[in-house]
Image (cartoon, rainbow, N blue to C red; front, side, top):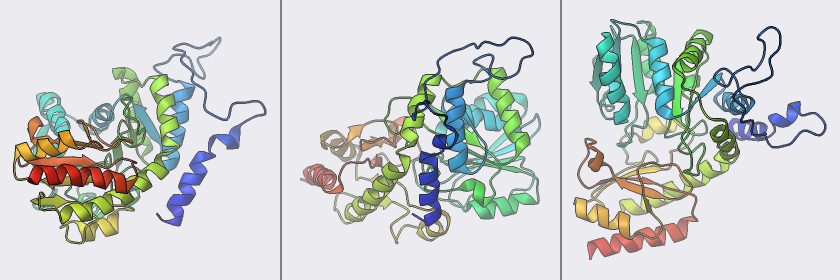
Length: 370
């Protein structure tokens, strides 16, 4: 972590304290009201679809961490929808990664193409090949989910600057402590806070952030008019999770680096992807672009059966389709139709002490090889 990151984390923890009056609670209160006392002119909170103090408190924290205004949504996909609808018009062209989160493609192909938005895809590896002329929105996901390929955000922003295209970056896998797309020139950042920011696998939430006031205004209007409003209770829980994100993320990334190195040497593993490994094809870019290398590891086993055996027999792995929680989890992604080998597993390293975690993983790997 850099000193700037440490300072950001420290200031975040005391952000609320800077405005507290005597007798106010240190922890943000949960305000579950849907309507507010509003005599006279409609100024201030009036209706839950417009404002809520608990939601605004979480947005203030996320804005601090992202270094730009942030808006909270009831899921990561709601944030992605708001960003796309804020930027696109009928007749526009949208470029998506063909190997990124598949639900983003389903949204674009199912709900944008009927409005005469042309949707094109490219693999993350070689995403810049062919240039960006004629595109109105360029959507990137780096590292890609689940393959963990990287794209050079700053290079894409530079290439797109002459076309007038908006660059949207899905930063779900990295969090503000691992990668800062807005600092690299992205128009909008989107992320699923269901994952590491909340970290406890008990809510759905997402956010979008942008330094462009016009884009923030359009996304806010989309949220209000479409009704994509997050719940106060979820925001209250997420704020509590966000307070420990830096220390959780640090431990997860350190452990993932240790585990990845050992996995790379195990005979059960046919191939491994982790940006922190010097032999990973994205390592040089990861060193330039990311503050840490993340907590996700891509593993390829010889067969579907071997992959499932490891996932289901390791006592410190939860078979689950999400990631970023305090518990280590794993999933064979081909079962959802991702374009990966049948034996490809996405491993999400949690906050368990690394040596017991590795001992459990090694036991399951050794058994699968027996």
